[in-house]
Amino acid sequence: MSPTDDTDALEELASLPTVAHPTASPDGDEVALYYDGTGRNELHVLDIETGELEQWSDGEVPRNARWFLKWGADGDRVFFHRDEDGDEQNDIYAIDRDGTVEPIVEMEGQCMLTSVAADGSRIVFGSSRDGQMNVYARDLATGETTKLTDYERAVWGAHLSPDGERIAYATNETDDFDNQDAYVADADGSNPRNLELGEVGAECGPADWGPDGDRLLVSDNTPDLGRVGVYDLDADAVTWLGDGEYDEEGVAFLNDGRVLASRERDAVTMPVVYDPGTGEGRELDLPEGVASTGWGYSSPDLGGGRVLVEHTTPTRRTELLAYDLDSDSAETLLEADHGPFEPDDFADAEYFTVESDGVPDTPQRAVEHDPYDELEIGALLYDSGERPSPLIVNPHGGPMARDAKQFDLYTQVLAMRGYSVLQVNYRGSTGRGREFKERLLDDWGGAEQGDVATAAEHVVAERDWIDDDRVVVFGGSYGGYSAYWQAVQYPDLYDAAVAWIGITDLADMYENTMPHFRTELMEKYLGTPDENPDLYEERSPVTHIENVDSPLLVVHGVNDRRVPVSQARIVREALDDAGYEEGPDGDFEYEELGEEGHASSDQQQKLRLFRLLDDFLDRRVGAPAAAEADD
Image (tube, rainbow, N blue to C red):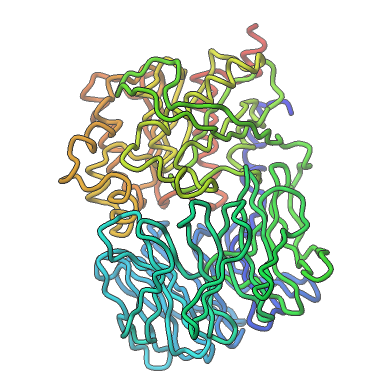
């Protein structure tokens, strides 16, 4: 691919239609999904037999398709989450086939629908109304809301049993912040019972009820790599599936009793189907990439042994498939839409590994570290084809996440502009088991940042086509924290930095993020500011802001409730106090994005960010084509 100065390319890329959150109807004849083929995100329903895609909404659903959908029990309406301009303080609404929209739950905090009673009488949802995320039920006839749990730590994955008599969920009542246990309680929240399936410090939780309500599909990482099990409630015993070779997580029971799971290996995610009777399982026969049969609360069951699959690769956008588990064949339900582009126009991903002890050769400026354990770190490199090519180092968010072989629009935008992109699955990333993930505990801004810098050094040294005078770090969310931290810890490595919705001040983040992020993220990884004040100060990028030595772009959504906009305002003030000049020709640039929270899938909001990013890189490190002409 060759770069172009034609900014229409950014608009074309931002306008590529996106499919989000497909979920099968109760009878398996339809699929509800978000789709923005009109230019705005709208709720659509796909008829499996005819392939007809019918639009139900007309502006009533959020512009940003972050939150999932769920069918009503009768299959005649769909529940969705609605917030205010991306603030994620969701209320729950429903829309029917005529486009009639009805508010179902409107209350303070963030609401997350998790279960609909089989008889349609009520819904079960999580809410942070009273501070912490707990479980509530809503009677759809009377409108009465009842709080079912009242735990100090967040409660996740509340699933109502098929007969409506019990709920299963996950929470933590131990003193170990790493711990999570699976519980079963009566439908009103009484008589809760910890199933005690994993050791203390491991993460265990329910994924789905069996069709007859006598079994639970559970996930647990006690042995290190995640495993999937079927828990028999009558026998009070669990049968673990698979051979433990890969990190796996339970997804759903099918109506015929088979189990779907998700398997992660290297940079690939593939669905696995298990026969609980024999324990035998196999991956679905699909091209390697990222394939999903849904998560947690979305149904993939199309009936007749067929399941709904989302499939994507680095060069192919998401397509929807009906996969026949008996014949191992797939039928395309909704083709991938590449707009004016072809798959060959996009950069493919090369997966490689590098040995890292968390201490790169580049001098450390903020916090000095002795070498850590040497680990094999996985990474993806997208070659733009430009020679010489500038490099964008793009750490992922989370940090409990990873980069994989899927279509990444932000990466492809950069590659089309001539920038090669490096993504690093540093220690703390998912997909490598519990031990690898827990390497990040008590060490934000430590070895994981060294892993990122080591991978960047490796690519610059080993790929002679990389321009080592044009290396940029760009990340969002925890990736934004990484961008800030790379800029203050390893300033000699980078020629510019872009921090998008990133964390700058850990104590302020603790005070102002949502309650469940405070306990499940901050306390888990760092303790509290009262317990570890020195760690909170030392690992805050703003503490070391005087180390910034190259142009910095700060971008943040004003409605962000995960990483509040105060994080950006704090670093802006610190840069100003340290004598840095703000402006297009200054030391840093600052942009707040209105009507937007923690990123957005909306086409116009994506385009706004693409243009900001493209303009900054063009001016600060030089557009690849212009640099080539100067040579």
